[in-house]
Length: 331
Ligand SMILES: C[S@@+](CC[C@H](N)C(=O)[O-])C[C@H]1O[C@@H](n2cnc3c(N)ncnc32)[C@H](O)[C@@H]1O
Ligand code: SF4
Image 1 (cartoon, helix red, strand yellow):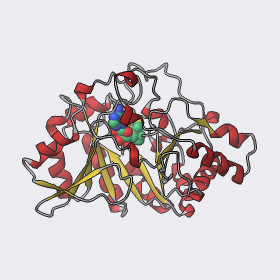
Image 2: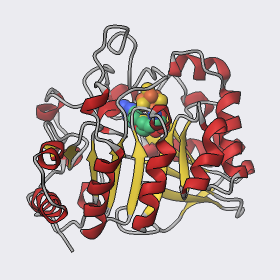
Image 3: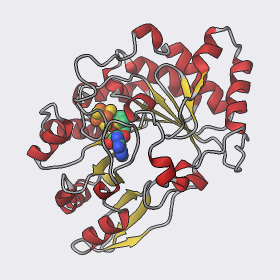
Image 4: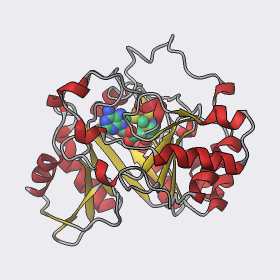
């Protein structure tokens, strides 16, 4: 097993398959920055599916148990189901995080290719609020159609909602009730200071503790045990046995001590922390002709040197450091 300098194994690889997205969520890709003249990566800059498969295979050999495709919006990458079919034989759990805009059309192909589960991002059930947050006038109902299409294909669905104070926090109880009744696990995510473009302020964060209190006042909750080491969501179950929800408290209760995740950007830079600044250029290693063994060694060497624990060190001093964008590095 490969451990980093703080004794953490590499278990989870998030793979960004594109830096592009058809949404402009205000907390992720604000239009003011990601407008018409924003320079996205060219096709030849992206890792090919074959290159992604090699990195994933090396990661699995080092102990990775979970592969998550993300972006940008992973479903805008052409033929992404072909990549899924290439990754499925590696034996790791295979998941995908999506805004679900294209999920109704793609669910069947994704399931057939061997995807195990999906995580859908949906921040509000209120149509006006959701249209404002995705900033491309996309309706809630089309996302819900995508969720149901995935469920119909037998894919377990989790729903992630980023909460920004004053924008969508008035809808959290309604969301909790709706997804409890549908049987899909809902997780609320604290709005994070990733990237430099979303104008993040601590005042915009609704602490997970407050979210739980507000929901529990109407739908009583009790804490549930974590499923495994490094689980990012804290689990809470409804006391009437009707299901559970999660909260991801990356800002108010950072969990770096248990972080077993690495991320690879669409152009093949490996990041060992969401707040890593430069990443490690695995594409250069691959395109210089590295063998599978050399690629695995390179990955092990990067992980072995890892000391990141940004969220635990977050302070006045770190707030102004340059940071990579979530849409680039993969959420
Ligand atoms: C960057 S997106 C990529 C995948 C896909 N486009 C989606 O939205 O599900 C992955 C996740 O990151 C979350 N995210 C983006 N910016 C964030 C921020 N500033 N704080 C917390 N979560 C954020 C999104 O809500 C989404 O659940
Ligand atoms: S959160 Fe996902 S859907 Fe929204 S802009 Fe970022 S990448 Fe796109």
